[in-house]
Image 1 (cartoon, rainbow, N blue to C red):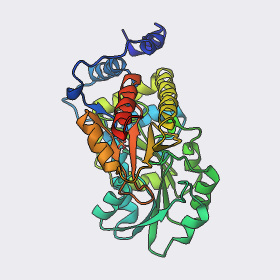
Image 2: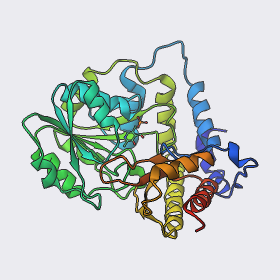
Image 3: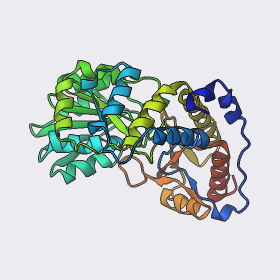
Length: 362
Ligand SMILES: Cc1ncc(COP(=O)(O)O)c(C=O)c1O
């Protein structure tokens, strides 16, 4: 059966009602809720896409250069000109290129608390990173960011919806930064498929806005490594000029094409994540010793209110029960916080149950 046919077969309904997996020995279970992977994308469906992609490929040949096959597919499916697109080995590769090409030994502003890899790539390329903090509600004001710009600032990294707060910033505040800053603004929309709006189609209208997207989250292809950036053609040309020709493998390029052909199926998976997120949020809100922050992504930031119980300890105890979440308590503004990825219903139930036990008889 072809992947495209699955939608006709009512497979989505079947997937929804699929029986929960029961674990016999909970001590051996590893429930991955720490890396914002997406296990609500059905494994069988993913496998079908992967097999179909692999069948169409002769791996004796090098891939089409610079992700060309995927560039074409994204261009056709999403209506973006090819010269306004760069495809990378994960959006990570594009972050690396931005740091090399646009930051170099200069300085980058990073809107914190956020994804650590911006700082990593900037420092590896010899640059320095400065933090601009969100406010206590994890919101940004464009003016506050612009006030921090110095002569050395080459790029500003904004993640929206932000990892790990889950907050999607207001579009006008982001666009204010884009309009009034002369360097590059990287808007990382890795989680935007779970959120109300995207600025991706705005990117080519500004000479200095690069919007990054990934197939790792909403499309559940984290292991295949494919992501893309959208921006003005000159900006994209610079990035591509520094990219190694074969970084995006053939299977990933073809899988990208198939995934986009099956967008309706993935829309259903995305809807399931959003519904499950709201379910998990409601469960967390019922636990008195926690504060869960509303999220526009596939994870939720949680603050442990009891100072006698550090978030690192909660994470350690969860790990002993086979559940992996991510402690974020060391990041600015996030004292005693951890981040949990939205999982399948059975994983979410197990997580909530364990959490209540760890926090003491709730
Ligand atoms: C905000 C953000 N950007 C980018 C990435 C990397 O995505 P990719 O798998 O496309 O390299 C992640 C992965 O966790 C992320 O959280």
